[in-house]
Amino acid sequence: MKYEKNIFVHLRVISGKTYALLNNDVYLFGEIEELIWKLVNNERTDEQIASIVSEQYNITFDAAYSDVKDYLTELTNAKMIELVV
Amino acid sequence: MEQTHNAEVILKQIPNRLLNTAFVYLAGSTIEGFGNVGSDIDVFVVSEHLPEASELGSKETNQAVIKEKNTIIYNTVLEELRHDFTFISREDFGQLITKLNDFNHQLDRRPDEFDKEDLDFLHRLRFSKMIKVSAEHVAIIQNINFNNLNFYLALNQSAFYSHVIEDLEGAYQSRDFGTCFFALRKLLEISATMFLALQGETNPNPKWLYRKLQRYCANQQDMSLLEKYMRLQGYSYDEQTIGYQLKETIQFCQYLNDLSQDLLKSK
Image (cartoon, rainbow over all chains, first blue to last red; front, top):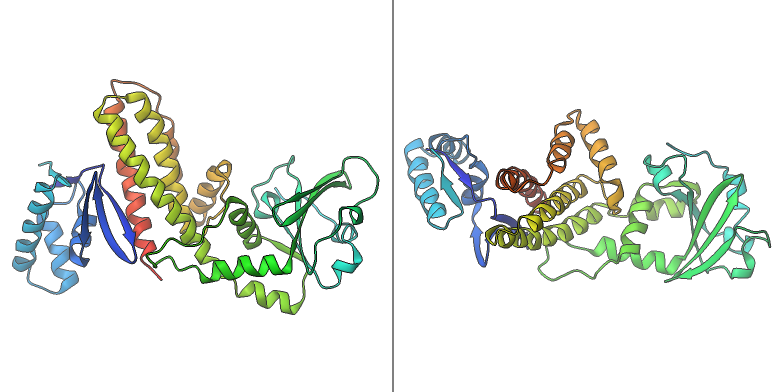
């Protein structure tokens, strides 16, 4: 599955921490969340994102895929991204 | 296009009592490489004291002396070229440099504000050409942390980005497409200015955005950023296609903002 970002979400780094802002909602990104956010574009699949996360954090693909899926669902529920395929 | 200049003629305009301990440099669009045949030459003089108006120039025409903030500005024509002299005291210069060096982009509190003139002055110093300078002055200049200028300008643009994207969303939801059209252009300018500032392109004057983009792309040997910027700026207003234009433009701005925020995390 592929996702794309809500165009009205924007990142802002404040005091070295990364926040995603959408209307009046503010989300603090951890390191992996930020990486997943940056990897979301309308061309990359969730499996491809998980593969990159798996490599960068040296964890199994299955573990990465599970975390990535959960987080993408969370972002979708928050209307920060949406499913395109 | 760089104008020719005659250092000897320029230095003769500076009162002797100031010149001995002053350092003098040329700056501005001609020195930065952005100027054109109509550009003047900007001369900066950092001296212990400021000159009196009566010490500057002769009684010839086409000269003006203006006190502006903590500087003295003196305009004259030398060898058929307009020269703008700016005198600043060593104390004020030192305070400005200390403020820049002390700026920490990772602190939560808002920094002491630099005003428009400060930013312009610091940028010009960065792209300057010394014509009278001592070893002591060279050491001072080499210790200036111009990266902080990158961060300061980018942080300001980042705050503007937040405002404009919120305005855009509101306008689009209200079907105020004319406002969307104008705000999209503004967002493009903000995004590019922020990203370029973090690459050291700190000229604060919006009129040089094209030249900054051009120089950045040429250095990268990849003109795609400039080409995309110009294509997105080139859209004409059409209510039937504004939705598509909005999405494509904001995605590009979002991309530049993500890159910029990443750079803002760096030390």
